[in-house]
Image (cartoon, rainbow, N blue to C red):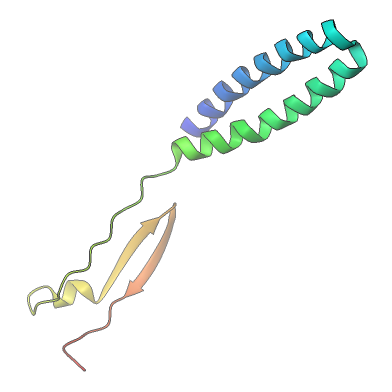
Length: 99
């Protein structure tokens, strides 16, 4: 829901910018050029708003620290799930005590 709210906000800003730039171009060079500039900016702002909203709402990355396993926490290091960019990945840690 937050992603959609950011996207709508960025699209409103982009639409206003495209409109006013289109007005300035129409005043200088006419309506044909203004239409081309407005449509180009409109579709550009669709993409920019999407990229910005995804970038802002992207989950923070976890800092994974490596530690020397001890017999006490060996069981907890065997398998763990790490969430990166909204996807869960199941990781198996090798047991250095078996080698």
